[in-house]
Image (cartoon, rainbow, N blue to C red; front, side, top):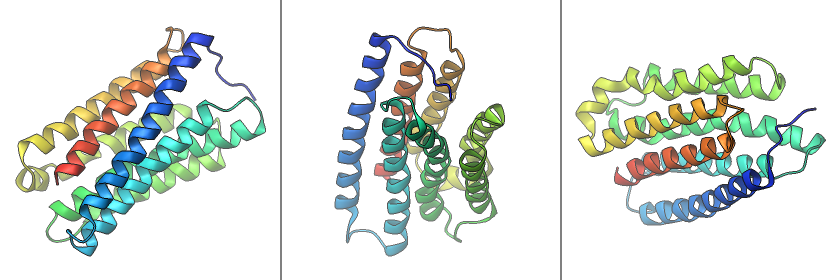
Length: 208
């Protein structure tokens, strides 16, 4: 099993980003759920729980994998980390689909969850294979929100839509840095952009 090797400074910056992201994410989730409890309908609150679980799972899995020492345990955490990204993407869709689609989540929403489940299975069952396919699937799922563009435009104000698009753009830019393996601090840049993108989407969810 081979894992990426980084300098001490690169690892320190990456570790700091993971620590800050995990603490900020948990605090934000607790605030979000606490501020909405009893103030939104059951369906909306369940959708927020799904989103919160996806976000917390992604942050925790990424921190556990990236900060652990090489070995069999790290390999298992790698699988979980990569699979959890799919759950986070689908989880982020959920509050918007439940809140914005008055007739209920339709085919695009369930297609996203189906593709996310397939992608997570791929990462768990076939580690270190189909890496490029997985990356394309990540980005494809992330931008699949365009399939819901018409109802979103009519359901949410421009500020929320701008946050969704900005978050997607930051995730996409982060994926580019992720591929630039010879660039110093490329992994920290990738994770920093992921946190910035997640913050944009969190702000959008909190504004619902």
